[in-house]
Amino acid sequence: MKHLEAHFKAIYQENHPRVYRMCLGYASGDHMTASDYAQEVFIKVWEHLPSFRKEATISTWIYRITVNTCLISLRKKRSIPFSKVMRTVEITNPENESQSTEKNFKALYRCIDLLTKDNKSIILLELEGIPQKEIANIMGISHEAIRIRIHRIKNELTKCVRQ
Image 1: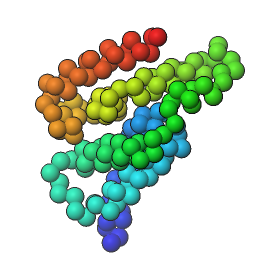
Image 2: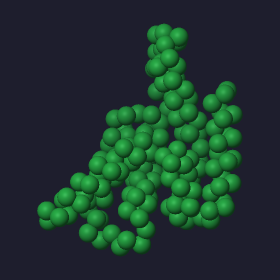
Image 3: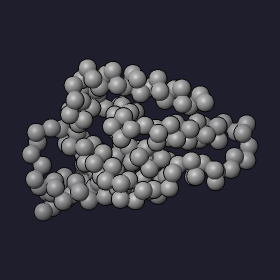
Image 4: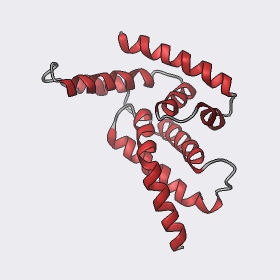
């Protein structure tokens, strides 16, 4: 049991930042919801770690759990639309660079939130720096299809953020 706990701790420390950022994308920038999603992911990782078959890398397996957990949670919760959250945000000093950066991130999350579930999963994995071949494996489609979809999604997001 100690070996399993140590193994899980190492997995958690290595993967938590990326899992959290992916969850943040699904939570439309809501940090509390993202924390809840990430916690659910690692509970599932802990529960199923002994049965991990090593058919893929551990990170690919965890990303698949993350995508599934976030999508299931979104279906269950039918969370508050990001547009309502955006209306409550007040920017006190638009000249402040950090606030401007925060505004850009919020715009990006708003646009990501408008994507289809599959495209949202693909772009969040891409933003995490996951290799496209691994994204293809996670999503169950060809590498070429992923490459094309990422290009189209980036164009769509660029147009959306500029609006």
